[in-house]
Image (tube, rainbow, N blue to C red; front, side, top):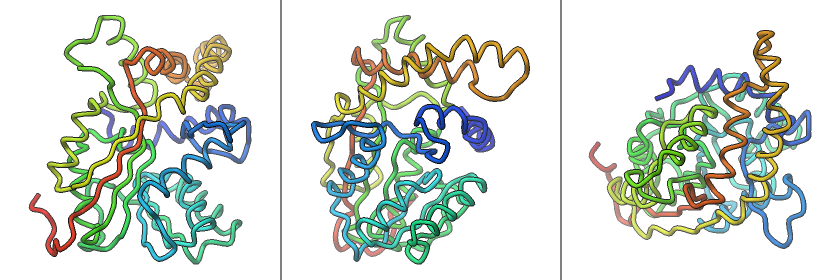
Length: 291
């Protein structure tokens, strides 16, 4: 189970990996994005994922949104600039906050967006603060995902929505073959996440946290083009990562490249699924759910 510091260190050490992954020195987005017939580049896929998630949970300019695990702020800045809502992004990394604040200023939305160093397991926000809580490929880093969902429930207003885009086990963890266990562990180790829950397990946690009207949309096919890209990037860079590792250069880590390679097998063969969850905090709830 990765510690908070290990997660911070992972993202700090992976900056160049993701710059190469995105083909840009400035784009540090680390998401798969969603491909469809209108999308022709990874950048477009990333923007499309923001759009689809916003539409799924009905974000409007009147909403107050919290982004759990906001990274370098790309999704938060997109929501502010395209929809006009207020949004707070939280992350464990001071470096990510600094970069995200600069990004928001350059896009002239710093009056709408705030970034803070905070743990999404135990935020300092008051009960019933936000209209929407969102997470794109960040709750997967948590070793106690039910606790994160309960915290989201607490800080959402009655009728508030939660939207989660992430990967999950697509089959029972008890039925995995040895090869499937090897693939999954390689992926987890490379990106510093604990073993993922099964999709049905996460859905059960949403209900246990108090959410209702739970919707699931399978988007595995929509992330496969990015999974293929990461796979081949990992294969090409694997020899270089081995050489750099021997020289003590902390970029293009070997475990990270192996994760890039193996995540494609997981999604291609049904071991993993990627999708969007949307759920609602019931109307009329005045107090936070007991922890």
